[in-house]
Image (cartoon, rainbow, N blue to C red; front, side, top):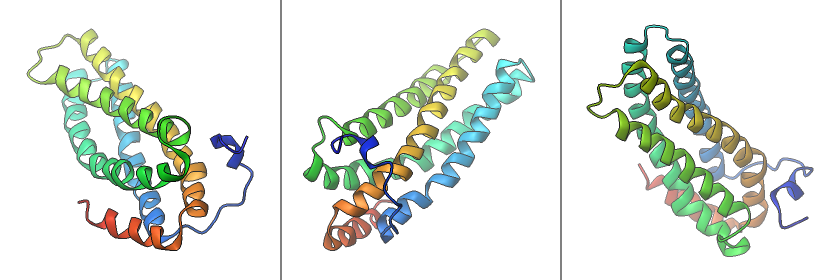
Amino acid sequence: MSGCMSGFGGLPQAELSEGLKQLKSEHPPLLEQLEGLYGLTEKIDQEMDVEINFNELILKVKEFKKALDPHSEREEGVLFPMMGAYIGTTSGPIAVMEYEHDQAKSNIGAFLAKVEGSQASTDEKKKFAELIKNAYLILTEHFSKEENVLFPMAERMLTDEEKAELHRKIQEIK
């Protein structure tokens, strides 16, 4: 059981080091943006001011992507490889986290590609908005896994020197 993420669920939450604390602190504003996106997808699904809400959704998705990309890079480019040195990256928690990042980015990318210059019908707009709803579902669960499992695992796993390096390296990603 110690090799899977659920094996760490019953351990007390450790005080997070600066780098991990920063990564965790980036989640609430991203979640707030996600909630706004989800609300817009619901309005589109219910055919409430579809044109206005769809145009707002496009703008808000672009804003969200701008905020999400550096956060993802901090995790994928710094945290995941550091943890992967201990637990590997081809299976287990890091592979799952990277897969979820890929899925969310894929949904967001597909949405943006489909809406670019599109004269879509209301039904098509609902389908496109579904991609954002999928990203919302993936990321809300993903952030929870990171906060409750991955970050505490990293806190216990990484040395003090590695934690300092993590903090330093993630500061470089803007």
